[in-house]
Length: 82
Image 1 (spheres, rainbow, N blue to C red):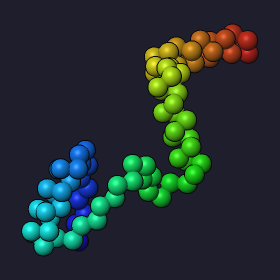
Image 2 (image 1 turned 180 degrees about the vertical axis):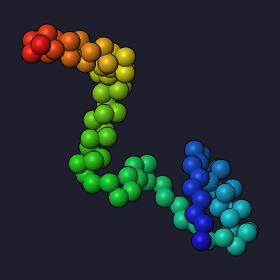
Image 3 (image 1 turned 90 degrees about the vertical axis):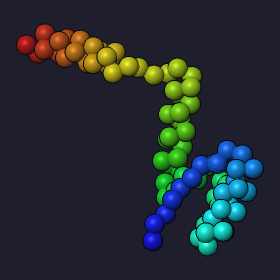
Image 4 (image 1 turned 60 degrees about the vertical axis):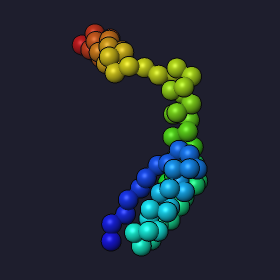
């Protein structure tokens, strides 16, 4: 068995796709749940949502910023513990 996932943005395309699948004699399932998180736990889902909220709010750092911060911190620790 092969599973195909298709994202459809409007009702007209959905009805066209349903008709095509039916005409081909294929079984299909329509999942109209906008937030289908599969087998993820509630904690995982909340963590992802929190991360997405951080991105939207601009609470992010680039890779370069993080690496520069870590290099500076490592230099400080080396100087302290020489």
